[in-house]
Length: 145
Image 1 (cartoon, rainbow, N blue to C red):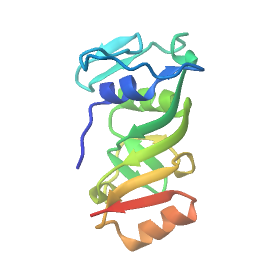
Image 2: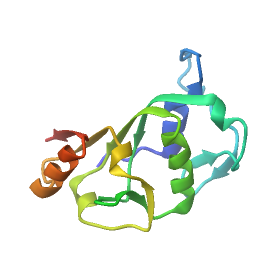
Image 3: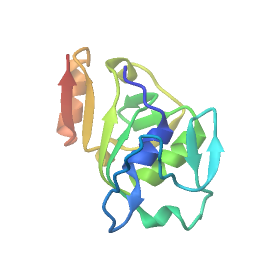
């Protein structure tokens, strides 16, 4: 399974509305959203109601999940749920990266419904009934070997 830290996703996927991404000559330069650093979750999260977050827009949001089920995408950590929920609200396209084991488990808190997911990228071991359910919900499914 590909595991990317959420902080990298925040840095790459979020930019001020109307601005084009700026290229840096140095790979060590990152533009990040202001907020509190949650080291355990590897994220920077602006406080609820913080005015800096609404000015950002994400053309594509790539995210992972602790589990995926009929009720939607779930995470065990409420801090991650809050961060991902705010990013989903600002994204044009939401792409979920999960291995097939995530379809066999349940986790604590629902981040979003399947209707809010545009694409799921997973492996070939996804059960056929789940694959059919996702497609019937209008989710684009990409299966990688």
